[in-house]
Structure formats: structure tokens, C-alpha cells
Length: 109
Image (cartoon, rainbow, N blue to C red; front, side):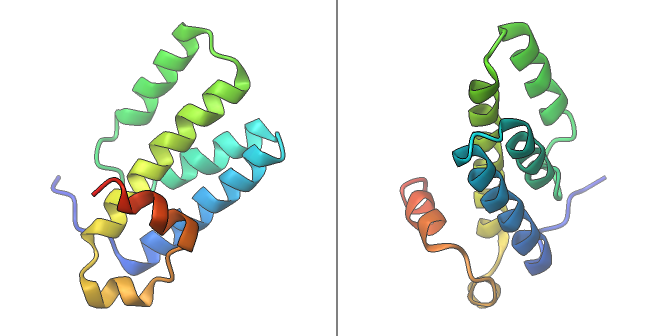
């Protein structure tokens, strides 16, 4: 099944999950952060096997909870960036992308 480009609503939802995850991570609520990052990465995924594979690697690596949260945060951030990049310029103007995220993403392009 071919994947369709991201919608404005999907980008907004993913961004909210990422922001929520970062807030939880900063508050050291790592389990809640991981849940939010997984939800972000699950919105219109590029590869349905990515999250299960990441989980296997994390479990086999014996990472601490904070490290696991950081891994999922990276996954969610990259995913959101890809979704944003699928929007055309008019659609991007309709999605108020968080300023902090925009600065981070500029370095990735």
C-alpha cells in the first residue's frame, strides 16, 4: 500500500505529541515521554516495522529509561520533520510549527 503525503492535521497532531513528550522528558517522566514519542512516530508512518525494530534494539541494548526516552525522542523528531517537509509552502503556513523545532530542523535540511 502506497503512503500518501502528510496532511496538515497529521503534522499538527504529531507536533503536539512531540512537544508533550519533550515536556514529560524534561520533567523526568520518561514513561509518559516515551508514550508521547511513540504516538508521534505512529502518525502516518513511513515504515510500519520501524518502531518494533527500535524497541527490539532498545531492549537488547539494556538502556536506562532516560536513554530509551532519548532514542524515541530522536525517532519522533525525525518523523515530524519528514511530515513537515511533505507539506507544500501554503500548507506549512497553516501549521504553526514551534519555533524551537524550526531552529532544530533547519540544521537538518
